[in-house]
Image 1 (cartoon, rainbow, N blue to C red):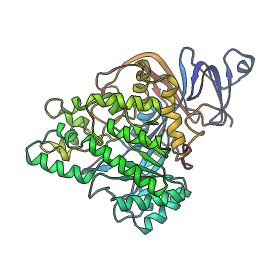
Image 2: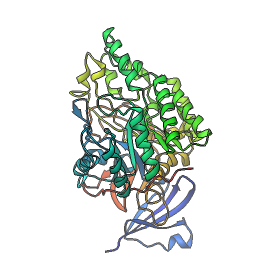
Image 3: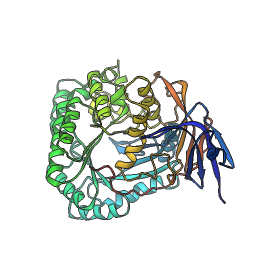
Image 4: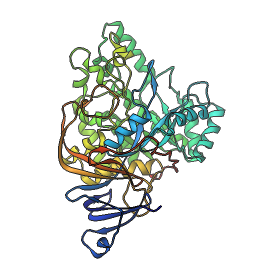
Length: 467
């Protein structure tokens, strides 16, 4: 049975345009747009009308970096695919791309099948997968080709975490060479993990055990060095490169230099690096453990370089690296030894609101907000124009956003399955009001009307952002 919805009277904002328009949705897709008050718009008929007068109508967010149910440090990320994607919807994000994990000794297929089993039938919004490659060998390299063919078109490698996810330069080069042939995109966690482990050992030997030392040993120069090395390995392989969770001024400079050379090198940052700092890691007692993530939070002066990179397009995407661990019982595993604190922060629900606040604060424009949170992640990871925009033929992933509503971010009111908020007490202006996923209301006037299992697995094409 056909269903039609019209969203009337809002300011439609995409990465390229702002227009007062009515949006017609038919059978889960955008059917048409017409300027509000014109005969064309007045002719739209629908079963359901959403009044967006005085509001923004924006594409659903695309969060290309989440870790639901990730095993890490002897525990698991506290959000399941059900709770995490529901929280994403509350925050105006309608697509997540999560990371399936290959364990050492296993095939990529085993890891991918395990993540499909976790997610299938449980998601409130649509989802895709990247593949973490932990064990590069001849079999793995062949599997990369097969995965690209079936819509897993990006592969993450780690220069950090020796003994867990770590790949050496030779393994990285082999994977990059393969991706150069099959069209895949290598995503890199760029930190010199071998050197960091030495600094961790030395800090603990000195009795430096508190959370703030997590940031002190994971030095910005070791992020920059690894970023530089990853760029040059990609250049040798003739492959594009996407560097995840960029946090340091020096790492941004490496990306900018490579892009000035005309290389297909891209960078992502996250809200925690834009809004938090080492001041949070140094909070009294063990409170700083809430803010332990890798790459780590940096001193506040690094934020200016990240905002500038987002304005100049040396950084293209803001994702969350959502990887929540409860303070009680999980972060506490690292009392007396910061290296045992599970690495990760909650944020999938907060990203769109924090970036809207950045618009109000003058860091970015409204269209750039949509570009870095919706359109570019969709293009980077082969989801555009199905996702990331409001245009005829696109999936009707649409958010009615109230730019004037004020809220205070708090664990008391968020929907992520974690016992603290990284942004507790922060006042922001702007709030999601209604969210449609493929035309179906999952948030309706600030009430959850979705269901587990509505979200479907979404295969992806190869990167659409190459120069």
